[in-house]
Image (cartoon, rainbow, N blue to C red; front, side):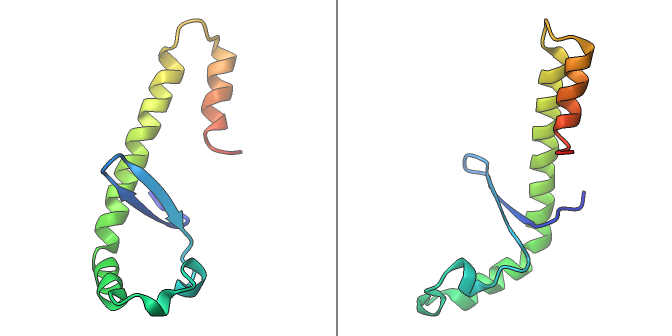
Length: 92
């Protein structure tokens, strides 16, 4: 699953946020020069990028599965409404 932005998942409560690859350190944190652990943080993020992307993709798939299951198993929703809700998930 290709993501348009890097997705970082923190699995202590499943907090997912995205940061565009074009975002620079100074845009994200104006005080970036004051961070004494900046180089270590960058080293860690660079070496764990693939793992974090995989974990994020799995979380997105799991969440999507749960949402689709809720749409299609809820009693009292007609087929047209189920279809509308399903396609609304794609954002189109």
